[in-house]
Length: 114
Length: 117
Figure (cartoon, chains in turn orange, blue):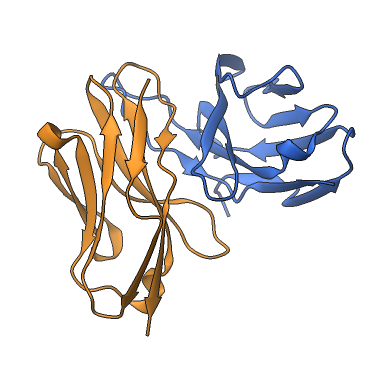
C-alpha cells in the first residue's frame, strides 16, 4: 500500500520568505505525484503534478516541486510567499498501475503574515 | 460554473438517521470518486466509479455506506444509521478516463460537511 508523509503540519512565514514543504511517499513502483492546495473556504485545486520527465516541475502561482526518486520525496517550493498563499497544502500520490485513486498526506497549513 | 458540484453543502443530522449526498461531475468525465476528510487529515479514498460501474471500494466504506452512479452521470452517497464518527467532509472528484500511461487529474467539488449530533 502506498502512503504519504508531510513533515510539517503548520508553517508560519512572513511575506517574501522562502517556502519549502516536505513530502515523502512510500511505494515501490512508478508513481504520479501531486500537490493540491485548499484556500480558505474553497475546494481543493491542483497546484502541480509530476508524471514523468523533468523532475523539476512548475505549477501555478510560482510554485515548483522537485521529484527525487532516490529519496522518495516531492518537496514543494516557492522563493517568495505572499499573504494570498495562506492555505492548506496536500501532497498526494497515485500509482502507475492503472488504478487512479489518490493517497493524500495529512496536509500542511501555511499561514503567511503580511 | 462547469466544475464538480455537490449538494447539500452542509448537513446536520441526528445519530441513527440516514443521509444522502449528491455529486454532479464535470459532464464529460468518466470517473467519479468519493473521499472523506476529517479534521487534521487529508482526504481518504472511499470509492470510485468508471461510468456506472463501481470499480473499487475502500475498507473505510462500511456496510452502512452505499454509493451509486446509475446512469454514469451524477452519483449519490448514502449513509444509513449515521454515527458521530461519520462527521466529516465528504468530497467528490471527477476525471477523464486515464490515457494508456494512466495519468489523470482529479477535479474536486466543494464537499458536503456532515455533522452527526
